[in-house]
Every structure is written in C-alpha cells, then in structure tokens.
Length: 112
Image (cartoon, rainbow, N blue to C red):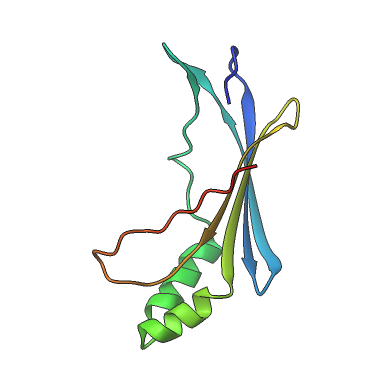
C-alpha cells in the first residue's frame, strides 16, 4: 500500500477463543514519510493484561501437548485500515503452536 501523504491508520487486534471474540484492542498510529516510502511502526504497543495472564498460565501447564491443545482454540486477528477512508490495508491471522526453540515458524500467504 502506497500513499503520498502521512495518514492515520487504525489497528484492531482481536483475540478469539473457541471462535468467539474475547477482547479487542484498537490503536491509532500515524504513518511517516521516508525517502522512498510511507511507513508505520507499532513496536511500542504494550501487550494487554489478558495476553500477559494467558501466557503466564499457558507456561505453567505440565506438557507441550496440553499447551498446544489450549492453543488449538486460540487465534489473534489483526486488521489494519486507513482511518479516513476505512480502506483495508492488511489483515493478519495468527495461529500458535509450542515447538522446539530452534523450530522455524510457518507462514502462509493467501492471495486473491
């Protein structure tokens, strides 16, 4: 997505468990123009209390299999839109699995 001006984007992060939304965090972030592109960064966003508690409880489970059983029903959906036009810029769905520390992530891309 390219834009000639700085814009404000809306970042909606939803946590779903068993197919139902549990919590939603909505943030507004301004883009900034650089030499070759307009960019945004959301690296200062704090993890919500729900996620902190979820991760702490997950880490206390006795086995990887049990952790993955819990994660089978856990999804994070992030939707990024241009705030002024409501145009969808990016949608990311995250599914999680506990694995070996040297295991590489699996990434799938859906194209139209």
